[in-house]
Length: 111
Image 1 (cartoon, one colour):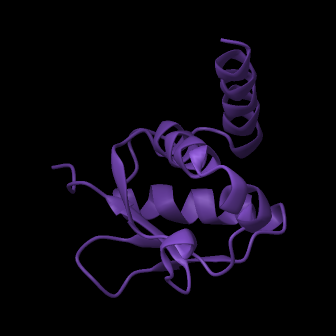
Image 2 (cartoon, rainbow, N blue to C red):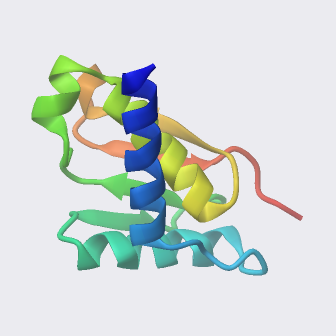
């Protein structure tokens, strides 16, 4: 129970730090806004615009040491990104699973 409470407080703090994206923006614009916020905080991220859906790519895991001990940090980050973006996303690659980066993309493009 204590752990859940602490993780929820961390989640809310990160959401406030990264800010919410505007609901009236496209998926691409939301991803670009999140990328900008993360880059400002020292993350090595990019938005891949080459496909039909944008992909947020973390080129290094900011929590690798922690995540290798407790992967719940990955779920926390995923939940934070969903909240900030205001849309469901999926993690399609993960450093902990042996990929060279972590990637997130929208579950479906909103109409």
